[in-house]
Image 1: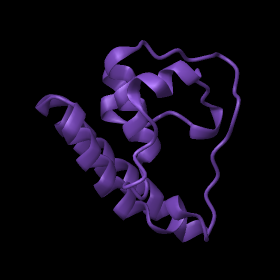
Image 2 (image 1 turned 180 degrees about the horizontal axis):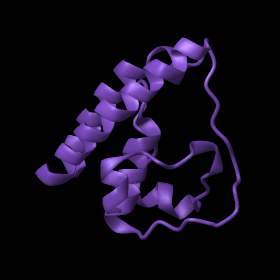
Image 3 (image 1 turned 90 degrees about the vertical axis):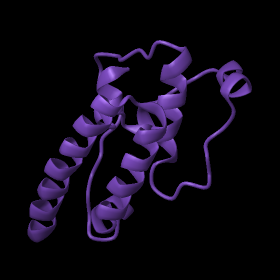
Image 4 (image 1 turned 60 degrees about the horizontal axis):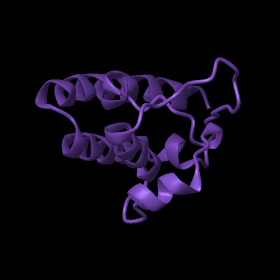
Length: 113
């Protein structure tokens, strides 16, 4: 759960959960534009241990029309705001540092697309 507070490393298409979890913690926060899944993982992590399978179940790709490829700066601003609601100040600062680094990577990647 600690690493999740620093970075959103979960590939949303590769996630599975039971209906009872939705009944317990509710559904996705549709008020968020970019990080409704990340906010959900943090809510789950507060009360349940997350499990990672060793197999790759999904992939992530960037392209010129994707939200994460074109609006990544807004995405990471929203992600930091979500993190601030769930994480301690130390993790928020680590998350902020990670965002600076990943935004730089996205900018370089977009120059190649």
